[in-house]
Amino acid sequence: MNTPESKQNVSEEPMILDHDCDGIREYDNPMPSWWTGLFWGSMLFALPYFAFYHLGGVGTTIADNYETEVGAFYELQAAKLGNLKPDAPTILTLAADSQKMLAGRNMFRANCATCHGPDGGGLTGPNLTDDHYINIRKPEDIFRVVHDGLPTKGMPEWASRFSEPQLVLLSAYIASLRGSHPSAPRDPQGDQVAPWSLPDATSDSATTAAMGR
Image (cartoon, rainbow, N blue to C red; front, side):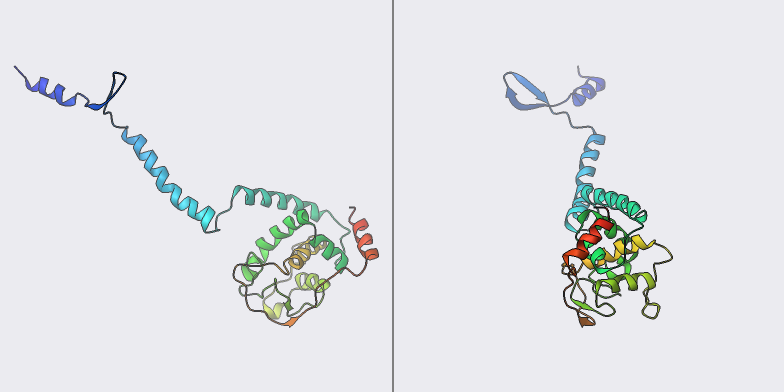
């Protein structure tokens, strides 16, 4: 005679699945709910994570974080370089140094990107990647504008915040942006300026020697 207790035990007995492998049968035991919840939660989290870091270009990757740390290191080193002169040979020589430009990029993104965009394409400030400039005719002018600012145009002066070597490094990074391809550049403003070049090999060698390279 089946009692209520025996019926309860029968109903709680796990169901055996139909498939058989070498005489081994498998119970239909469901995964624990907490494990299933973690699995689906991970899947749902992966979608916005992938979009944020790999599709939208918003989040920073491990490589970006590494470059930021390296840039911060070179920025600290630049603060100790007391012999960088704000002349064309120094600025253009630095602009060709990819490692030192990591420090320049850090400074630019932290202080200039609000107006000029993180890639220099321009926001409220002008585009720094084309061949047209409003207040610049030669590389030295970049340093002058960064150092003294343009109060009437909303451009702050950075001489009170950074040392001269750091401002030379920042000027070199701005010079290196010319000819790059920002994602959404502003239309050209000002006059077209001829491409920059080092005056001669002698000046270049002197600059290199002054930098201790």
